[in-house]
Length: 66
Image (cartoon, rainbow, N blue to C red):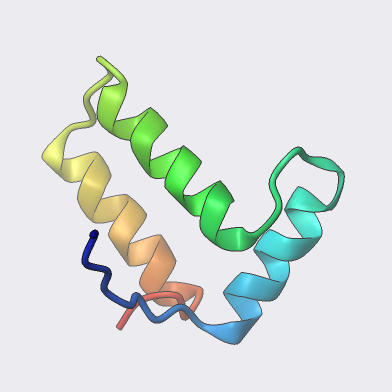
């Protein structure tokens, strides 16, 4: 038996993802997010700390992170 946790996402972000995956082979936002995270974890590409900060700031500016 697996244990699960909950991740909260802004409704606007979820709506954007739902619209984005409308023509994609994902049954839900959860499946898409899992796919993207696993793909990123398996990627050999690394981003710099500065780039990670820039991405984080952009997400905060868009209201996706606090």
